[in-house]
Image 1 (cartoon, rainbow, N blue to C red):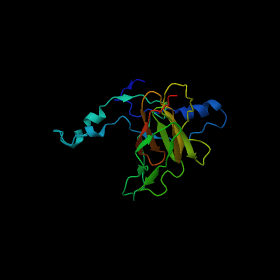
Image 2 (image 1 turned 45 degrees about the vertical axis):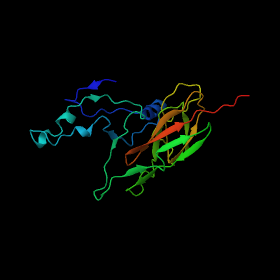
Image 3 (image 1 turned 30 degrees about the vertical axis):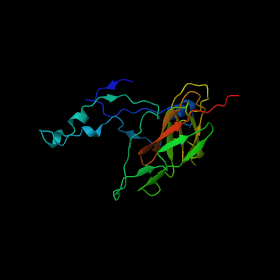
Image 4 (image 1 turned 180 degrees about the vertical axis):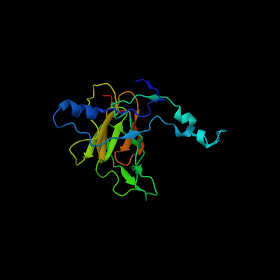
Length: 216
């Protein structure tokens, strides 16, 4: 990954891993029907309404921020998608979950994460949500309510207990998180749930307790 010359390039478009997967299949598998724009790199706290040179310079710092090359891994990019809402919209769609902090006490313990979108009727009813588990050594994440369409908006990764920890992404309407065995200490991870249609996300903090062992 490198920096782009933001004096001449403001948008960098590439295929995601899912797009590259379909392109490699050949035939009619690859057909671009949708695209997404994101502003993950923009720090809007740098907007300065007190700039001494006036309104034209409020966003000078933001406009001069470095732009990095786009990355194909959708678990690390496009977490903050730009969307267009109907003109009559008065509220921004908000993604919610039942509990933003989850603790699992023993290996195999599980809990359900069922995201919901408020302030927007039918929001994410087609493409659902993408759930990203930050550390695969802490837990497994499974889809319990799958999408109805045959093409997932993301490429899920399935890994075993002996593989190195990495982030894992799955797409659906509802998810189950299952604790893995922790022999040394309590472990923590985050689960980021992203709305695939309306944009927006919410992060759930996950803690899996150290397994208790009996001495015979």
